[in-house]
Image (cartoon, rainbow, N blue to C red):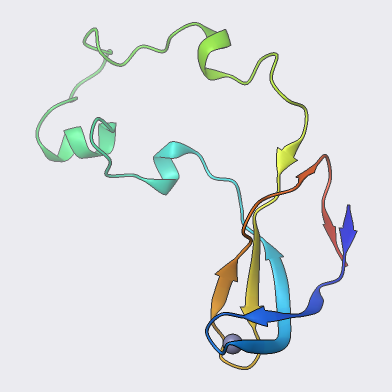
Length: 105
Ligand SMILES: [Zn+2]
């Protein structure tokens, strides 16, 4: 999937069509997106739990098939960010499209 870097789209902040710069949001893991979520090791350490080594019977990983995407879909949904050139605000794509490879030219 190839698409131009600059497009003319509707900006919900200006409520008008303006030139936008397209970028693809980076897919981040759970630990990076919500580092202080309940049950995360980072938060538990702050609270004085999950210290020392070992998994204390709580943090071991389940079987690979249950957390790695084995046997799942080959394509990923896109998550575009549109940055308006006029107001410099960013808005997101409403619904992702499935594509194996995305190129912004
Ligand atoms: Zn705008």
